[in-house]
Amino acid sequence: MIELSSLIAGVVLLLLLMGLATKGWLAARHLQEPALETGEADVAQPCPDVFVSRVFSRGDWEFVHGLGTDDIQRLFKRERKNVALVWVRQISAMIKKAMREHAGVARQSKNLEFSTEIRIFAQFLTLMAVCGILSIAIQTAGPLSLAGLAHFVQRLSLRIVKVQGSFQPAPLVKSAGHA
Amino acid sequence: MVYPDKMTTVEQAYDDLSRRSLSRIDGDLARLIYLASTRDYNTGKYHHDGLAARFQDEIAGQALELAHREIFLQIAARSLEELVHHVEVYVSSSPQSREEVLQVWQKLEPYRVALPVDVNIALAQLFVSNIKLALAILRRRYRRQEPELASRS
Image (tube, rainbow over all chains, first blue to last red; front, top):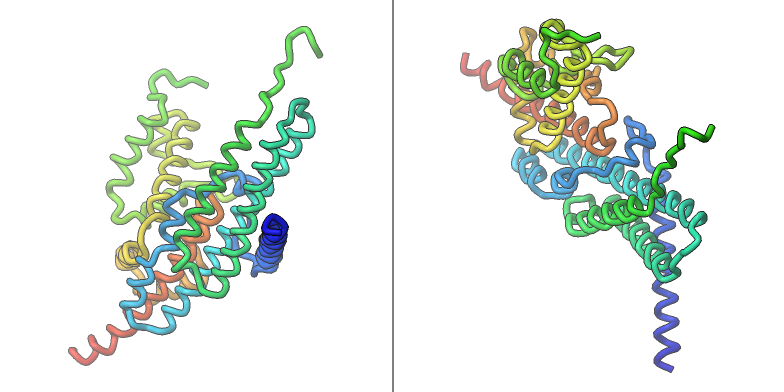
């Protein structure tokens, strides 16, 4: 009986995570288009850690708060929210690209390890769910109290991209004798 | 084409650029604008007459691009308070009135042209956003100062 309830709880949790991931993805898609377009090169290039520290820390907010002007404070909150959402969208795109490339490599592989594939997929799902949660949290509360979650996403995304990089096949070398 | 009398490494060209040109410019933002202005709008290639006279054109271009990218990363990582200071230094060094420069910068957003090519999109967005905030903060600050200055005189 306990095992059955654990299973049900696990399935519910998984569905919840998938729901959040989908909601976050949809929210990210409906964001106001930023002035700067995201291209393939941007997706391939991870954001430096200093960015996460800057956008999600309270340092700049304390400076703006100290100025004592409501319109500047409102502008700051709006701007930081937009920048943080662009970052989340970039991370989501980076992860999706890494998974697409991984799936391509996996399809050609003859010695797939089921457990490894499940682990990678679970990491992907976790990250997409956290991106979804982060996206909703940024939209509702702003980025200033989400530094811990943002650093977690940054670390995990870099790890996935690194793991994906190690799966890339070596470039084919054409020998002189072949056309 | 090989120029045997010209030095050939990007590092040497970069040092030369830092020593002769960038060290004479006051403030990181002014340096960023200066470096961005050495880039051709149509080709995206960098050119600096003085540097090209001492180094191969390609090497000089690479040194300019490297310097541009580095100064951008330095500015993008700065706190908002520091950036406000750099924008203030830049605005104060202009022959036009501070209010006029701030107004034009807010309208035309010329700082967008100062972004290096292929820079991370989120970082670029942070830079643009911080400049916008710095301009708004400075305009507010100068408006507050105006009545104080008028009452003193």
